[in-house]
Image (cartoon, rainbow, N blue to C red; front, top):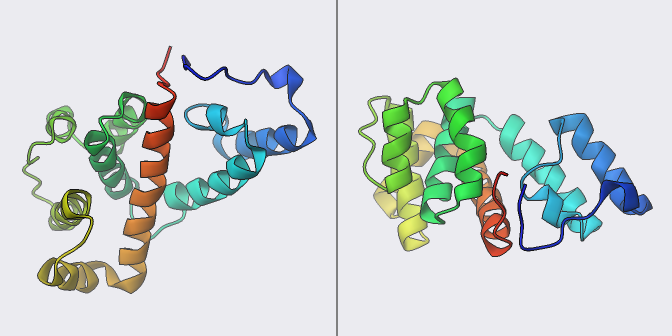
Length: 174
């Protein structure tokens, strides 16, 4: 991975960095994306790793639904690094290349699955206005429940942090 921030050398990690490194490898298998930057602050990396693991693997959303939300955030933040990481995952989860390209451009993707369509509407409104209007909120609660709405905002918030990290430090796949 390329970055304007000098990426820490694993061989030079201190005890705190080594502990976070080992934890990340045990759950994700690699130390890619924002974790390379976050290793400069092992405490941040540790907390972010736990939140990210929850947002990615333990919410009530399916993989394709989570990836849809992530790609909405990546498009809004124009985050190439996040797109490079998550577009292949989204395609493998079931989103078509055409739909992914529409999301990348910020265009309406023409979703036919009702849950996915509603997730896209919620994500778009939250990203555009930083709020969710009363009627759309009511629809979100009806479809996903209170827990689902909280998890939707959590996924989007976490991946906004990821996007800001990748963008701020100009992190890209090599």
